[in-house]
Amino acid sequence: MSGDDTPSTEGVSAKRDPTATAPENALLRVRDLDAGYGDLQILTDVVLDVGDGEYVTIVGPNGAGKSTVMKTVFGLTTYMDGTITFQGSEIHRLPPERIIHEGISYVPQNENVFGSLTVEENLEMGAYILDEVPEERIEAVYDRFPVLRERRDQKAGTMSGGQRQMVAMGRALMLDPDLLLLDEPSAGLAPDLVDDMFDRIDAINDDGTAVLMVEQNAKTALRRCDRGYVLAQGENSYTDTGDRLLADERVRQQFLGG
Amino acid sequence: MVASNTIDRGRTLLREQPVLALAGVAGAVLVLDLLARLAGVEVPLVGDRTFGGSLGMGRFGGLLWNGIIVGLIFGLAGIGLSMTYSILNFANFSHGDLVTTGAFTGWGAALLVAGWGVADVGHLLLVRPGSGANPNEIGASIAQAPLSILIGAAVAAVATVVVAVAIDRAVYKPMRDRGGIALLIASIGVALALRYVIQFVYGSRNRGVTSTQDVNATVLGITIDLHEATLVLVAAGLMLGMHLMLQRTKLGKAMRAMADNKDLALVTGIPTERVVTATWVLGGALAGVAGYLYVLERGTIEFNLGWFLLLFIFAAVILGGIGSIYGAIAGGFVIGFVHEVSLIWVPSDFNAAAAFTIMILVLLYRPQGLFGGVTTA
Image 1 (cartoon, helix red, strand yellow):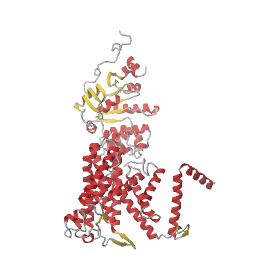
Image 2: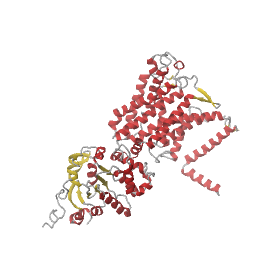
Image 3: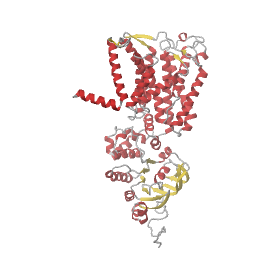
Image 4: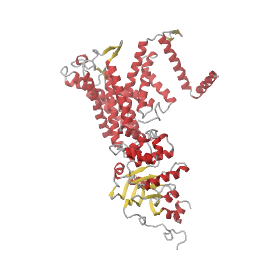
């Protein structure tokens, strides 16, 4: 055993092969992905899978490229190399408005509601690509977030952080996506609302929507998810079930603050 | 107590915002003076200066009516400027020349319809009455040839849309991600190019185009210029239509969403380029019709009319809160009223300065404009 300062994979419970615990028929399959912004490469050889209905989080230190992975899946960065397939078809060259048609919705971290539009108008915008506003989807969102029904005519910009996050998620759920991308859903929320937000994400996942989430709140996220990826310096380090990553000595020391 | 409170507040205001306090006093004096004039009270001051005087209700009403007309023109043209600002993120200096484009293309069509068989087709299309038949012989007025006037308005809208969308494809679309300053400077180039193409095609002479026969009608004892009435009806109708479009339709909501947050609009699946095109279509149509109606009201046309209007349109839009169409309308009325009502006190060479002074004063008090920060698009 190399119990000294030389890094080693021995004695680490998380597996080196990022695909090791990935499901057989992945909904989203990312292979050897290189991407960045303009000429600046952020991601190198990222490998990631999300199974049907699976709840996956990406954790890692600041600047590791967690959000970049998510944005790249949604076609918002400069694609360089590798493949992203969703439900068997390649999507890594598609623009965001086409990716939405494929069944992926994305909730950005900041400014994720149209502040000058009402709650209901925000939801209608979520279904823009449909010919008609799907009233039953709006009702489904209102059933999930009843406070939004009460405030349907209120301008989203005048709502609290937690309610705005509900509007943003509701907008993303309007197309009943197969995969929901959530970028730091707990950011900016009061501490007592964070658990509530994670409960809502659990509920969305329980209803069959696969979730890929980036979270700064790594411990909570790993406790909640099915599987986690640890990302460092734009490369995958480990993947395993959330609980086992949480228990992992290396992960704890490097990314979770001991 | 109340009086001393008021004095205290007056002192604070004087200390913190002396310009505003001064403007408030000046405004109060002007209102009193206006009331005195309307009441026919005249108090001699120094030399031949007097406080008050005489101002007939008729003349005052006429000035207010002119304020409405000018305000509607500024507001109608300002809506497009405000929309391109909020959705495309740049101040479009070529907007004034889109107004001119609408004026010439629209009047070319109106004269062609009204003067068919009376004058040479080329002269009519190039808006050159006088070389052949004069405007009254052609008879382009709402009283003599209402159909020609309405066709002209439709052509003004369509032709300006074509020009606006073509310019967007050729110039602004390749520069979409370059930022507001680069686009603004490009738009100044477009403005100059467009203006001198118009001058080249239509000539630089200022000429009359409308027929003035039978355009005054008396309704309930008040004489109304039917061309002005047409302007008010069409402009108000278009503004109402814009409001309903933005609030009720899917496209209108998408335009407001994009004005609000472009990045989010993109990830929401709103086809942003289609919304941009719609912005040019609507803004261009309104600018074109505004130019056409402006000529209908004043009777004359020249190649730089839009350029001269542009400063007022900008003033209206900035005063109202740039990015808001309701701000553009409200700002248009404020600038329009000040522009006209100030004629009570200042000679007509200076009323434009009065309008800009009001803009500065409003911005000192409310830097974001009347509707700024309240709602977009």
